[in-house]
Amino acid sequence: GDSVTQMEGPVTLSEEAFLTINCTYTATGYPSLFWYVQYPGEGLQLLLKATKADDKGSNKGFEATYRKETTSFHLEKGSVQVSDSAVYFCASGGGYQKVTFGIGTKLQVIP
Amino acid sequence: GAVVSQHPSRVICKSGTSVKIECRSLDFQATTMFWYRQFPKKSLMLMATSNEGSKATYEQGVEKDKFLINHASLTLSTLTVTSAHPEDSSFYICSARAGDSGSYNEQFFGPGTRLTVL
Image 1 (tube, rainbow over the protein chains, first blue to last red):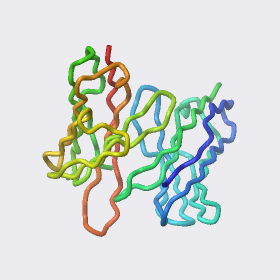
Image 2 (cartoon, rainbow over the protein chains, first blue to last red):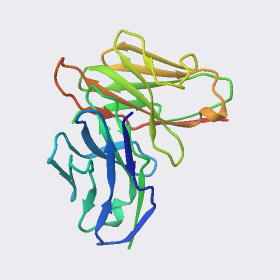
Image 3 (cartoon, each protein chain N blue to C red):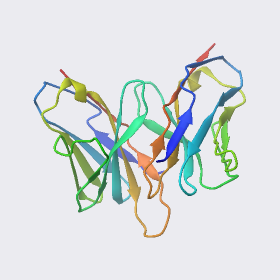
Image 4 (tube, helix red, strand yellow):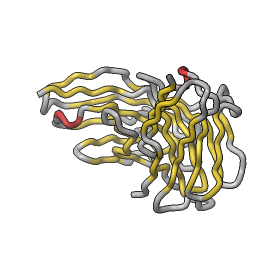
């Protein structure tokens, strides 16, 4: 079946550091890919998405590019802030397909 | 974007009681709703998929008599945890998808419901 693999973390960075959270997927066909963010005590919020190969999703300074050749969708941000501290979930599917989530990566940004 | 609400946001109940969680699509009609469960320090696991007016499809290992799902209208789905036990304590999240045959429609997630069974 479909699966999504991402680093479990936690990832601890200093403010203004560069962030990369790796995500790879296995799926039948060509799913949409997503990054969701979950702040402490809250539900999921869609951070960004890409629906086809080579698409780049971006939002709030975060970016991820749909790489079909490497089946990856790595999340990056050039300069993280304390307010970015949260759990980040990579996911595939959506629409008519169920969404398959990765395990979630906890990010902690320290001042 | 589309908004999905859940009620209640938090609930604490005694072991053996039943708890109902509502999921509503506020500004669109959701032909399909999904129920997920999030275990501590784990990812979200799909429990079931429900289509308006029909029986829910449960994922393998999910007890359909334990987790009753009703999708009675295009804007409301409910999850009832029957005879709850402490091991049912979890974070339950729903998502909703509008339906147009043949077109892609994004799933929108609710804020989640934290269930604690004493």
